[in-house]
Each structure stands twice: as C-alpha cells, then as structure tokens.
Length: 371
Image (cartoon, rainbow, N blue to C red; front, side, top):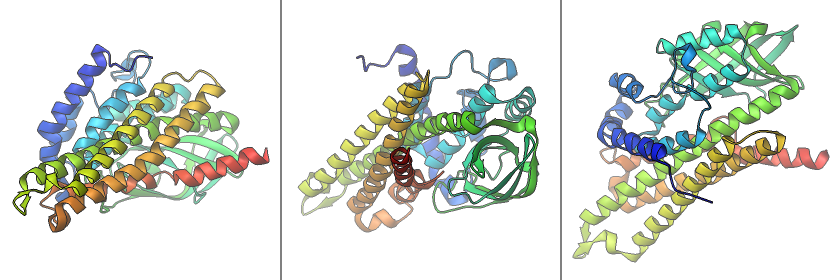
C-alpha cells in the first residue's frame, strides 16, 4: 500500500496551503467580526477551482471525468487550517452538484448548474430528526417546516434535501425561492453565510425529486459519506491550526525565565493534540479514498462507516485541541485578538451539523440487530 501523494495531489495541497496562508488567514479575523466572508473570496477561490469543481464541463463547470474525494480531503484539511466558516462556503456546492449530476433529471441539472455557473451556492440539508412534514403527492412532494440553520443557506439558491415521507426516504432539490429565508449569524463559522429556510406547503415537482425509496437510501448514504469525509478533514485542519498558534505563542511567552513552551505539561497538551489531528487526518483521507472506490453495496457501506468513524473522532479531537490551545494561552486565549478563541468556537459545528453521529450509529446498530 502506497501512502505517497502523486504529483497532482501534491500540487493541489501546496496550492491551497499557499492560498490559506496568504489570504484566508489574513481575512479570518475580520470576517469573523463582520459575520461575513470578504468580497474577494469568491473571485480568488474561483480562480483556484472552487465552487464549480463538481459541476461537469458540459454544464459550465470544471469536472472532466470522475470526481476525486481524496483530492477534496487534501484541500479540506488545508482550508480547515485557515477558517472553518470560509471553508464551508468553498465546499458547499460539491454534494448538491455531484448528487444532481448523478441522480437528477435534465431539468434539475439545468436549474442547479445554471445557478452555480452564475455564481450561486447550494447547500445540503438532512432532516435527521423528522422535523419536516414531507408529503408525497403522486411523484411530487409537498414540504413544510424549517430547514437549518446551515452554513451557506443565507445566500444559497438551492437545497439538496434528504428527508422522509412517512417510511419512504427521499432526496430532492429544493429552490430556496420556494420558502422564506432568514440570515443568521451564530457564534461559530461566522463567515459562513448561515441561514434558515421556512417552507409552507412548498411544492417540489417530480422533476426535482432525485431519488426515493431504496434508491434514495443508497443515494443519501453516498452523499453523507462525501460530506462526512470532507468535514473530518476540515476538522483536522482546525485542530492543527489551534496547535500551530499555541506553539508560536508558547515559544514567545516567557515565565520563570524561560518560554512556557518548554514546560512539560504544555508539551504534553500539544503533543496529544497533534497526535489526535494526525489520526483524524489519516482517517478522513482513508474514508475519502474509499468513497472514490464505491462500486456496490459492500463498498458503499465500508466507505460510509469509515467516514462516520472519522467524523466521530474529528469532533472529539477538534473540541479538545481548541480548548487546550486556549488553555496554553491562558487568559489571552479568551480574547479575540488571538486566533485560538475563534478556533474554539469553530470546533462546535463539526459534531452538530446534519445530525449527531453517535446517535446515528446507535440507530444503525439497533436496526441491524432487529433485522
């Protein structure tokens, strides 16, 4: 087994790292305070291949051939080192574009791809707790309830929605114009253009229903696999960034005649955090590698299990690493003049978005036991 990156993967990782170190980190603090990404983000990131990388070339995008989730995980890790909120915006179009390209009708593809090619965003939503009222009307759907809050939803034109109509799973593309959208700015990922979408008997025509029943179960599993692997990679980047900032501070801060970075207790904190981040990074890359090799039900289940486990560990590691980084800075760790305060807030959504991972795994075990 070869763990080395090929020439293209190495180039992608290096290019995104330069973008993060030069631009994203420079923008992060102001974007957090403003609760919005800088206007230049879309243009600069677009030049690097973001936003349209999962849209087929024939539809105005950049995708020629199969999509590489491994390359996405590599860049996601680097983006996590910069700003989780901006990273969420840069990655948000991938799942909707891939899902619609694979399972969507010609009408759904045209609607989404024209929007994305024009600079729009799409988000992925999952009704994990059954809060939405989704009713089947022939081959169409009618949806009521609130979607979100989700990053990107404050400006998105479409939502890739995974839900259920009674006992039947469905995957559908819902335009945000079908409901009432409201922008929100939570404490984490503040540059992420968060929002909610309230739907009141919103009609989703049959042409916008990508899959239903057993087909939808498989499709949703794959969509969540892509999403979880990406989230785990970004979480590893946030954990790594927290220790990078903590290490720099510890080298400069002097107490009792020596830099605090020489204290054994702080060395242990940093080392444990680095170990956890390295483990999550490897697990996320492995899950993405498996996602690139899904061919049947067995490989689909294996990829999803790997992505789920990576996300579970990622949530724990990024939470602990960012808290420890704040502890290393002491009182300064809680001041937003230092990056670690933002990173600690940014750790929370990795374990909370689109449902609780551990609870999902409990339900899966119970379902298997009852089968």
